[in-house]
Image (cartoon, rainbow, N blue to C red; front, side, top):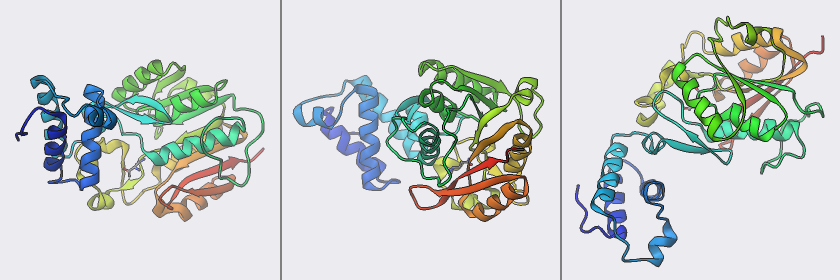
Length: 308
Ligand code: GLN
């Protein structure tokens, strides 16, 4: 790979054309802009205003290696080590799932549902509104980078937020993210399929939220290499013969730990909307609603625990 000069506009054009080997042209250009902005604080305006702007040899090398990684399908978020979620910065590394826009939609729905004064740029789409008082305690199961727990702690300021994950690596990153975003989250290491942590089991929550693994092994062939080759499979996949395993276990856990009239919020596989609704009813939850994500797919489920 070689660019014709160190001028930023030449580098930009050259590396975008390299990326077009595997990305479409819009995506290729957007990726280059993300790299230029992240590493050198150069944006479109700066390029337009300073046509003679050049990269140093070491800057060029940085760009070169980042593009090389992109050409190996590595997600840009892992290359630059961060991503944005609910207007906050989150550090991400191999070993934690990259936060998704549909998860952000779920968080915004929860926040606006509970706090009518909450300043997030979306309304809540559920028909049966939540109780008017703010939630005292929230539990996020399978927190990964901590994006759900940390954003809720930020948006619903007076709530106590607990987050659990089975992965030590995820918890390490989530803790750093909580610190960087200046919120308190109580992190617990445990496996929700077989929970043992006394504090986790003995507490009572107003909201339990989870984006558990929900992609069937058989769906792997529909997935892109950037997800398959780089993101943690334990955060993504479930066996075809028991695709709702996490939801069942979480609902069992919620039967004991959710306060009466408390709420469960799930991100779900769009293929299992009906099954999920049914599972919630069978396991004693009411007002089960499914919301569509921005792609029009069944993605977010909200259910309420009976009062008794
Ligand atoms: N939405 C994610 C994806 O499609 C899956 C997240 C999950 O399994 N919880 O990659």
